[in-house]
Length: 511
Image (cartoon, rainbow, N blue to C red; front, side):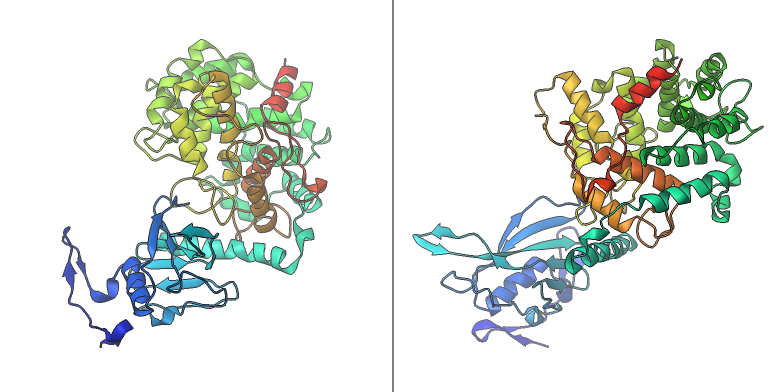
């Protein structure tokens, strides 16, 4: 049925229109830009001005829409646009003045209208409001999950900032330590299903996750060091490497976890656990003709293998040119058009694999083999606008573990650019291209479980993996390149420094 518009014009439903690409668009599927144009015409307002702006999500098309108000160009702060007059749309008049326009096939969200800065036009001063409009495709399971996740996270933020409860921005250190220490002696039953073999196939990982989390919290002491060394000695294979548990086959992943946990223990007894000669033979057996490392005998070759093998060799002071042969070329072949690094050639860039690839080359002093500018461009787009945390890859949800896997990429890139003397990227003196405070706010407000430990995101349970890497990422974010401490909350939230400098001191202690 027709609808009255401005100047006595009657808008009629139009028949379906076929676009140049063959797409048939019905009348109720009009673009939000067209809806806004028709609304302005009906209100006898000047036509809206659409200006493209950078989107926080590259899958979205984002515009800034300037909506001049009356004919004289003035704007009244009390005026509220009634979007109910828009065909197929709906409006909300929340206290914040947020306007939401929804169409059956397209979503346009308009944020608060507020006076723009005064500017002169044709000798006349005028002020125009503007709104942010996101043009997105049809709702999908991915977009619905993203919206739900944003709402859950923002609910935690609003509770603190709108109620004035800033004191809740506090690291629950004692609760986390109590939970971690219980895990050191007895794992909860729900962790039995971590992988097909149960927790028995990942026991060195549990030791490392718990030990490192306690180390970052500043409470790993000599009481735990001999227990760590004793247990991991039973996981070492006579032919070299460590297995996921006693009497199992050696594997590069638990080998990295075991050696890292022994470095955390930091005692002479712990250092003497590793058979270095057998370990070197094991690493050489894992070298793949493709250039990387197999995870185990007859196993898969991916970016994890490169990092686990080279990191272990570096920590044990057995890194050689023989081990590094072909590694830079293999990692470069896995760098994608996006800029990040994939787990294998031909796959999409991923935060965990990107850290593994870059860290491997940084250990060898060959990070300049990568396209570092493309890498940086990819990495800076992975910090989520609303949540503050990081996603692992495009169109994925925020995840606390990427606080480390993505967040630790930036100090490595900063150092790689510095060593390369690059003049194309001005090196910031007080940050590493990401926002540390929003990341810490996500971890402190949305990821701490009341019973102890940290979780992936709200409405999830805590686990040792996310606790370890969430705390590691937060520690990385609390120490910038200028030795300034960008700390959210009071000093009780400050964690132990865990970076190349502190790790180097530990490695130098190893015989």
